Length: 145
Image (tube, rainbow, N blue to C red; front, side, top):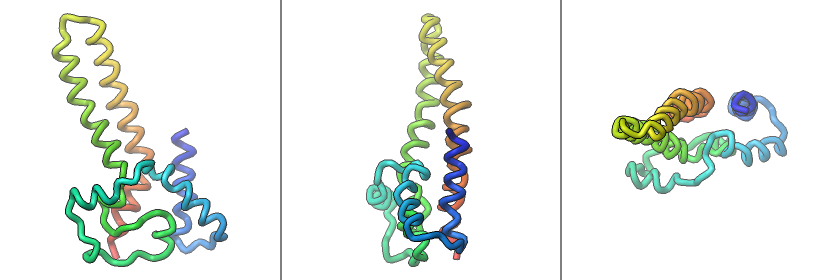
């Protein structure tokens, strides 16, 4: 499944490279971009308030970037709910390590915490970074003119 998401990311980002794409395909790409970019929750306004980002300081993006969902030239603002996903996953690692350390008497809880800790770090976190690399790379270099 992650391989198909990576392929869709590449196909959708073809419109950023001045490849001629029919308008109906561009509209379709705009709709599925939130799924491909792992951005199901619109938290852009909250992120802009939290990081104190000003709308006047940014430059105007080209039309093909705006169609794909890059509404801002700020990196953190474009990341959107990916910040939440990374924060939750990175926050679970110390919590599960603490549970694993404190549950030295209860073997079932210790085994459960060890399995979850290995699963979260080695499987889901690395897979998430691997599958979101293209999106993060493009969002990071949007503001380089």
